[in-house]
Image 1 (spheres, helix red, strand yellow):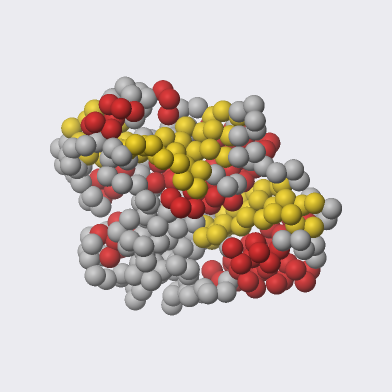
Image 2 (cartoon, rainbow, N blue to C red):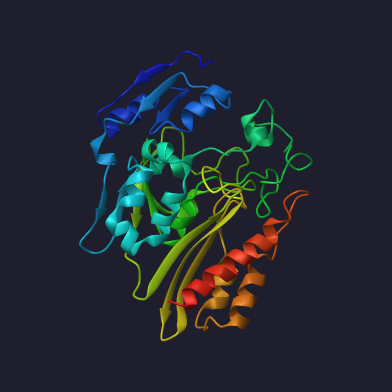
Length: 325
């Protein structure tokens, strides 16, 4: 049963920030994750601050300069259906289409999808795990078939977002505002690994909210996509996924960004693979080298070693698709 809390709907960003100054206040956007966390007792709220009346946080705009500007309250369904997103930012449209169920895509927002909390059953259950301030990651010796193979350390959650790796592959920046003012960060700098802080997933400070995301126009010759592998054909979170954006010039790779989902506590960018691909033709030898490089440093747990060949297959498949462009 939910505990009693106050509920407010400010009409501006400034009013929202004032309401969030109260200790125990929580931001409410689409609510698809917040309400589940409150019901499960993952955390408590003395006040829920709804952003639903703040018009400036809505909308998806393709600017004249080609930049894509997305408000934090844009729904996942709207992203998946937007003509400019589907045509020029295909990885994001693919990722949005792969999120949860149609009902959740219609309710859930981009800001919420980027900031959602881990789905680890130990974190969501009644366990005093590392992410909740305890001393033990129960996944290490427990049920860990869906947990991380990269970046674990003190905590082996996987980040649940599909849109985050797609936006990272598209070189997006996230706009934030809080008590200390506004700031804009590369999305890659928005997320934290357990070695940074095992109790947080993002750099959001108390009282700070996501305003939206900016995605630069793709370079000439760029193709992008997102593929998600899951246990069932719908609803499930990724066992592993890959977002990629590759620019080709005269048959060679001019630029490449590849980001994995479902395998690390944050979207996992494959920097070594990207470096390997630059100025190369996507022939069989290059693809094989890239697939092998993608899993260097993987540390599977007892029940999730299947993710290693899965990641290799995703990279091979993506590079094969890019070579046929």
